[in-house]
Length: 598
Image 1 (cartoon, rainbow, N blue to C red):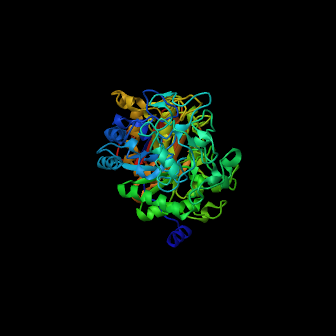
Image 2: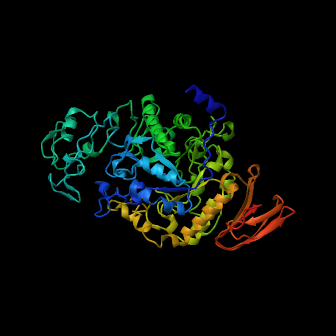
């Protein structure tokens, strides 16, 4: 701990250089079904023929070449650890951090084998990690959360045995368990464990030790089966501050001590036993070969506390790249720096810095942690989706607030948000506007990330997540992708080919990977900038057009011969000036002593 404090306080810890990569992000359980025998239906939002747990590592191994053909060099997978909840297919409701969920593994094709297969193809693996919370079932072998077995739940007006919901026949207990038990936690009380080892029909009377009432009983308090009494949680493992509501989402104390939802129970991440448990698990996956870590729900853990985790992992695996999700619906600089409704201490840039002063980013160095670029993303509903770059230049002008803006993770959409007015839907607009967005993300600073299916406008316009009481996962942006992967016409989609070529160009020009942006000039209809990595022999001048063709004139450039990586055209610059035309929705990447047309 003393060593980490010194490094944080003096100069920070430089995170690993992941900037040469481009990332493909997918939900493992929804990508490709390589082994139907491990498929599983959650009890919530059941849909016949579409198991929530449908994809697996065997399927992902089979489709690595698809991701490689697109030109991506890293695969970001949702949390692979064992989950528990009524709707846990996505991996964000951890129950056992030390065990890979068996619904994702097959004999000879588990998580370890997937990592090995990815490495054999030259691709890196990014593991998604949730530190902030566990599932509503506690942590296997560590702490149990008081509730009644789900199989004894009977809705009002019904009677036990009448459930008719696909594999959930008779009751809502786990159909894959011989005794219909969702919770095999060895630290549960004896009465609970006894019922998990018997009575699959859920008909033998059970006295609720909390109230003295007997179940099954139609209409009996659903909270005793599905809810959480925050005051009864084990303080060694959990915060006891209740559930978030209203203005809590902009309050640092509430964000970091209250539970987000009934299946996201806030871990006491400051306790040493919690740190030991979580860090031990992460080290296990790093030893398995994981190359980088993405942290979920970043602002729900206080920065300095979170950095103790990050630096523990980086001490275990030097050079480890770590980035996190700090979701803001706005530019998100914080009230100390801009007109914002909350302090910078819960904003993305704060987590990339070591400054103790939220009004002075430069008072500290690079924390060793990067973030998803929500500030850039949050402009997209008002600019690129409408064929304009308006406002993008102002975001790049604030790059100085980050520890290192060239390590930001840039994106157009993901499993939670989209570039629409509600930040809720997959992009469903013009393909040309998507293409110009990718032109920006692949040539500007940061590490570009694509969410599965963007390359073919998959589920365009659909909600990213379930919306409403009756929606099922197949109606959302998280729909199963296997049919697309099996379609031989998929690689012919124009956006697929567009992204593939952008990956080729970025790979061929190191300045596009690692250099900061300079000479940024944005005028809504276009944007130009320089990526200067002269110290490593790479220098590029970039011009992008929005929805109309642009004539771009640059000055102050290095002299020499430039070749456009897009067209192969060449120009000699002797007075620092370069002029060129860019068609609508297109890009020109002029590289000093460049490789030619890529």
